[in-house]
Image 1: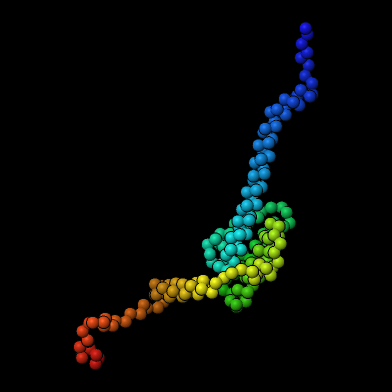
Image 2: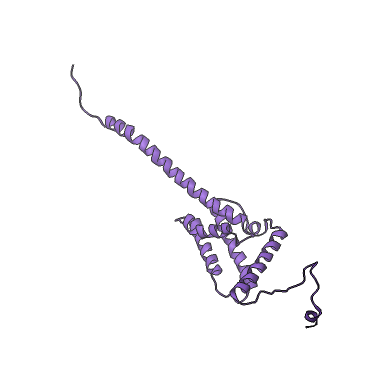
Length: 186
């Protein structure tokens, strides 16, 4: 009996497929997972911005804004549109001493809504700019608490920086003896 030791192309293909098939499958799985992770990070940024659009000083809001250039980087036009809208908003937010704070605040909202709209388009959501601007819940109580906290914070900052003295008034506590007549007359 004679053994045939010739190697055919089909034999080589079977050997290559046997070894490369699992490697290619693992690499394909990793590629798909990376794509899913990127999409999930983009959705998380969009969700944070949507959830905090009535509270732009929230740490989650600032963190989401600062994550945009990393997680929306890419070659597609929709990603470039997001980065362009982010750059315009960032330039506006970093403006020093705007002459008209009311107009500055209105423009900030316009630019932020434009950014949200670009992100929603990039992610495949069907929001209008009007939806993004008006469809949210912001209780008046939260606004009142934030305003009070800001007043308190500024007041203490002025006292601790020495800009204003800390007012102190001494009164007789209830049940304490009345002040002597000579003190009252002074």
